[in-house]
Image 1 (cartoon, rainbow, N blue to C red):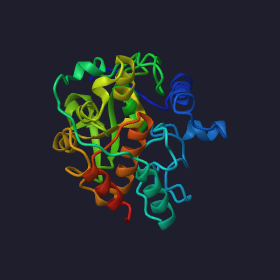
Image 2 (cartoon, rainbow, N blue to C red; image 1 turned 60 degrees about the vertical axis):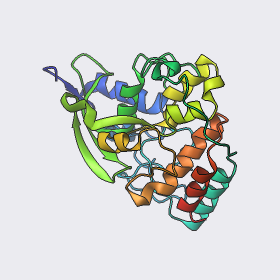
Image 3 (tube, one colour; image 1 turned 90 degrees about the vertical axis):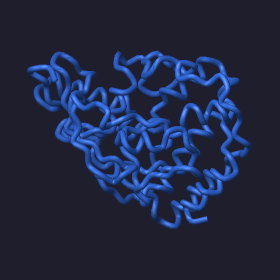
Length: 269
């Protein structure tokens, strides 16, 4: 960590920077300027979290039904019968097909990691790489490298996959990793091998398809679909299935039949 790191929320310059990253880039609604600045410690505005039915928990974040573009922080459980019904409707729209070969797949087929120049996705070309954008969006009590409003050097994160709080420092960067909800290898096997380079870059850097989670959970998942891996935190599994479906639908991807069946089951089918 560099000496003299600046804590978000100190001074007018930092407050303005926080307002920009949370309100302008994340698409939040400014209802009271003083309230925004007072609560500006990462993770979006106060009151954004919770289910689409109006319940809220700052710890859990936002229901995927309430944040279908991925620009709101966290991933909240879906628990009401109404929301589970809506979740099943979303998942039911997915086409199915078999998983194709992995031939030709490589991470660089989706652009270099965390590029800021993948046009057509939220937070692109804002001067900050995708990984740091995600840490700022989902983290709390964020601290930046001295002289930077981009490079996050410490934060608190609630990991929806494990249901655990993580006190993270850049010195141990691998403790928090950015998960591709629909893994890039999975996407390649389900049709992305035939996409344009630009579309693959969008998938790899779209906040809808990205969540900062514990490194161990991300490593355990690898390139699995939902039939092979689900978050250890059972409370979040329906939300995870919905987010997986939202990404696949946005990018016209099919899922395997077993994956779709498991996804529906997580939401009460």
